[in-house]
Amino acid sequence: MKKLRLLCVPLVVISMLIVLSVPGFEKKAEAAKKTASGDEQYDLVVWAFQDWTVGRAGEILNEWAEDYMKINPKIRSIKYIGKPDTEMMSGFLAGGALPDIFTIQFFNAKKVIESINVLNLQPYYDEKVSEDWKKAQNPDVMYALLNNPPGVLWGVPLTANVHLLFRNLTVLEKCGIDTTKRPATMYELLDQFEKVKEAGYDVITNLAAHEWIISAFVCGNPELKVGWEDGKTTITPEALEPGYEIIKRAGKYSAPYLFIDDAATDAFINNRLAFTIFGPFYNPNLRAAAKENPEFRYDAIPPPSHVEGGPYCASYGNEWAGGIDSGDQDKNEAIAGFLFYISDTEQMKTFCRDMGRPVMNMKAMEKAVQEGSEESWLLEVCNETISNCVNQTVPFLCYSLWSTGCADYMYGLWDGSITDVKEAAQASVERINENE
Image (tube, rainbow, N blue to C red; front, side):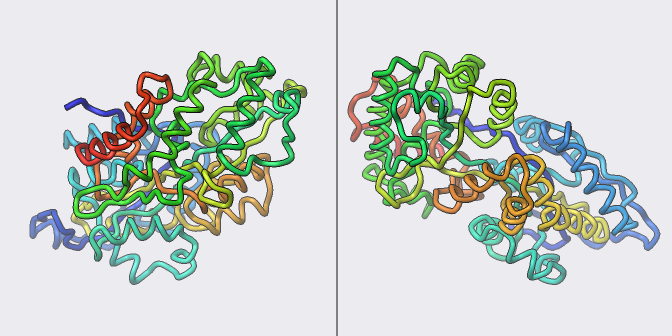
């Protein structure tokens, strides 16, 4: 069996908690009974996404630590260790020295809970978490964290990543395209692709390098149901076919460079490329380029649906934070408190506003937009897109992204090496199920 690629996306940090028996894990009796003495202090170690431990993100994390230590005198220090997602997973699987708190992507959730003794936050959530905190969170994400199985809360939601269609407005206007109007459907966007090609510009980056990016074309079908029931995907071949037809048609407009290459960014900011699909973390590079070159103008919009008014051709993914059960009730409670503190509205609002990254605290997103920043317009687009698109994974129930099982077939349709859409769709569903 061929090993499939997994998606890695830039991300965030922190969350999980309290001593209680967690289904699937055995705990030693003496560890369960252990409690801290009244005057004991704790040093917490956090494995955080590497890119969140530097720059402004690192400053924000340290501010959270300092503020929480003032609130909870039992915490003597909070140390962040930046690690790539793959390195975190390797550490969990290998055992040995583990952190008190970790951050991780949702598509790794099943592997995480099967590898380490994750702290169950449900008792703390039931007894101490405010209704304001609960109402502020994205309900779909909280449902996943709370119901796999019921009675266990695996962590707290943090940030999100979502497909966006970045448009070079300068190029499009030179091609006679009205940029004040969004394309109503993917088919209208394909018509714009043709106009750009006829005008002699590069149309869209080569997307055949990342299954999550190319899968955007598939997601705008209202019949696509991303889920997992009885060990099988709820995605059907028939739901994949319309998107696969679009990929097949769009591939001929592909530029001769990958979307992740410097050449793609260079072409976009120098007004040679019209479109690219990316996440919101692409924007800082573009914003800096636009300040240096006023002739470069761009925006980002939700990728249009297959049908007017339907779900966007986009999916979103999440990052969450959890804790490892220490066997010490007081320490577990301190860990839990920190997780819920950083995921509360004010803390998430600061991260969202200053970093320009969407978060899963919906109230924080709204406040960040209202307060305004250079990134407010992008946050509005992210918020709009997330509210009308599918989730990229089925956390805690399967091991990989649904799009991972489709990767080879989507790439083949894109480059023309595969031509039969129906066969590709059927084979994709079989591959998703094989690589649960």
